[in-house]
Image (cartoon, rainbow, N blue to C red; front, side, top):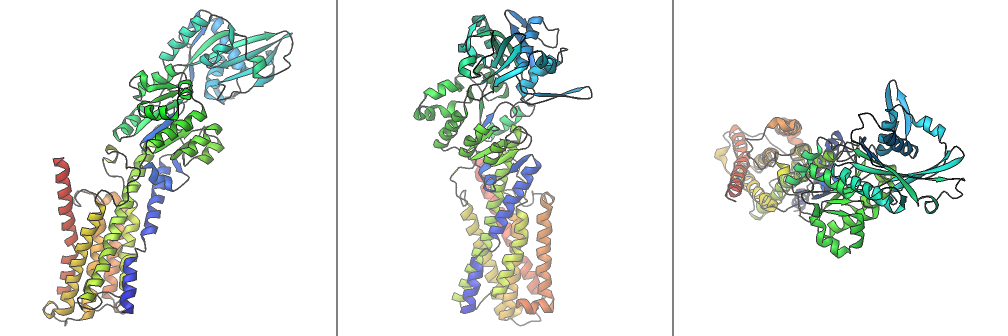
Length: 603
């Protein structure tokens, strides 16, 4: 009875399950890294598979982050194509705006290398390409102070010496600066701002103030008021070529893409419509409108909103939490220090690898080394594949382990004696189940994995009929193994040259359970027929399965290993019996798959 208890204990524990699950997650991390997604926290791999909302920045993630100045307006004069000759008025706007930048300009041969913020880089590039340099402007108008750009103020101011006088230059979003302007054709500027926005241009307003004496306080309150409007600069940041396709792919997979940007709502809406995110302007909301809404009001509308413009980092947190209150699993992108709380609050925080700060990357679960939205969609697909592979591993291992428990119990209750020794069961669990199981985690994503809806947030691992499949397979394993054990132990006519014995029965039962377990790994690979899935699609699995079969066969044939594992030589009839019964689960699973496929077609 003691050895029976030991055998039951060994049978009840799937020794390799935790190792296989961990390896499956690790394989997923490895595959994601090859596709430019670095996973910082292992559970995020599985969480990605359940994501049904992606809140994405616009600049650099959905777009190329390669700003170019396209239009300039100044006091009634408009340059519609900056590749043509620039007027003096347009050039003056660009020159003043370039003073209010922090980029570093360098030369690499004949090529211009500009390091810094893409928006500022675009302004300086336009100046440099028109036979002026930032260096000469800074020499002519030396900077004596600045108020740095802030994501909440959405503006920046620098102060310069201008001969015997002083000038402050302020640049920022037109609608934010509007209240700071006192002079200039503001009505016409508002019309131009709207026109630029509808052309998907990011609009930067430039204003200035002249002082007879050096300002005593370099503060927003002292300098960013009573400004004269100098002009507007319209810049284009083209969408990434792959963004539209990635958004369509996400939509097909039941994942909603939400654009969150600091741009004007008209500009954001134009880009979002081009990418297929926005269908109607009612789906767009500004940060000021959002701030007036209660959480309850936001929750009621959040599913119908696709674009948020002029938002603050605090607004991002509200958007994430509102989606989460509806039961969504949210992936959020971010690159700045202020984005860290929103990345932490989301289910999967995605930081930018190129433009992202150390703080943002430290708060994230995943880092996008190419800052590309399409990489997130690829990561979601891999997350779904990992989740499926974990389910396959659970199906594979538990089918075998549960059957082992019933085989031992039923044999003992029937008075047939122990069908296995503890060592034999341990071998089956570690070699016959373990070796193929380790490679099961490398199973590639099935075709059509992104044509299905997201995995429900609270779905259990045994959902979608997995318990039933495990139960059916465990029953089949139990029946064929007990049948082989009974014949080997009790029926002499099966033996030819060997009398029936307990040891022969154990050897037959051991081989049937080992071989059928190894072959079962091919049953769980796919919901499709085993004959329709290419063996070469997972060479590691094929190699591990062959290795497990060879090891099992060798220990059953060599005298030394026979003695070590409590096995005995068996006749040809026994080998035919073992092979015949070992392939029974394949045909049973083919019938199950055919049944489910027929049901799907009827639905």
